[in-house]
Image (cartoon, rainbow, N blue to C red; front, side, top):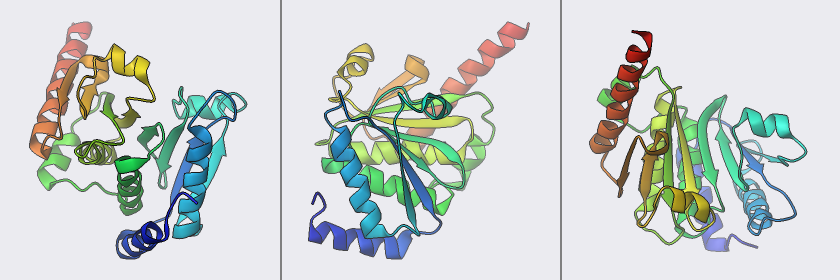
Length: 227
């Protein structure tokens, strides 16, 4: 059993208070060549047991055998967890959400159940203007105290805009990506593969500033292409 009795009790309490609409967690996994996949499967199964299948639905997919589904969700690494409501909001967790990152998984599920972001009205209004795809990559580790708040902030931005996707990536499980994007401190947020990046759990306004700066840059590039 991965989830102890105390943790199970806490999960039940928070879901009773905060959970709203059904959520599906889709795990992309495979039996061979993936050290954390089996644990991810067990973790999600236990979570569904605690929360209840009427609230939380669990689907297991094997990318090698279900290439079309993996392609549809843009999954190219395992394990990857997709947190989906009545539609796909572009919310992903790449790696095993263990340690402190378990709270990122829980908060992501709860927020998706509400079908709306936990952001100020001003931020939501500004994000409505975005009409160019923006990808937020949040590099985390399971022992980082500030990482969950940065990860959940990115999830909220994805919930607020159809054009924003949020991918939380375990840096230690994906060392090639961590090296490629020069991750030396976490949380590190990389926007559109390096168009902008920053380190630390920034407040909402600062996070918004980076996202809107990238959007303005992309908008200018697009206008230049048309000219």
